[in-house]
Length: 328
Image (cartoon, rainbow, N blue to C red; front, side, top):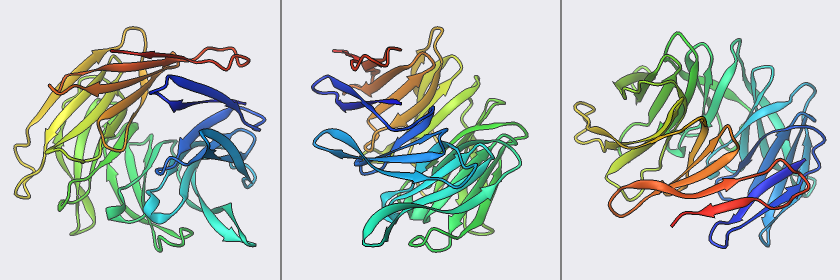
């Protein structure tokens, strides 16, 4: 199978590379350090690659246990080493981690976190301030939250808490963090309910803070890192548009009368955005659409957001070239 990766936007260079997967690749994720890439496939294997000399080289193949085809992957924060959660087609969440055995580093399937009766929509690890914690959203409208008893040995997990978001499918969620405040979560159900929740230590429960007021069905939602700003940024992709919201930072331990403003709105004509992702500093947003187009978005000094580059592929696997358009 062919993978397409971005080596450097500045030099407008994009390259493909072949993997040894035998069947369809379902997902691929780069670790928080940007040095390890993992891919999952219908061949019941995970492939690991290292970035050396601007080239991705395959370093390890992990053959999963029988009937453990993984279609979705998520990396933990690097604080806890190299830990990956994967979602199987049997609605199980499994943990894979890097171990040192027989004098060398290798990858191992550790344990199963949960097996749910309803289809899993998304998984995501929390910021490391909460510990090694994993959120699992399902189609019944529940966000299940699990934690590792010993983050240094991620082979035993317990239920931490849960949020009953809605009585319909929970499409997306993400974690938010502000220093000296409890961890927050934003959720999006297909009934057009987008809510922000705060964690209450008393009773280990989550409390709804406010509803963002989105009027369209949401496909994905991502909360940027709170770095060098006095406000939060949240990006939302809906059935018709890409939206960016600005939410003022919390003050005096109060969640009341929080100012929120939609600062960017981009209508997508005959092209739905399915996935979003912020960079580590939260100043560049990436989006992917159902037409195979990747766009990068950034604001200028006046706070006006625009598309700064567009990446389009083609369907010819024999062609190593991708098309990159840089906006001025």
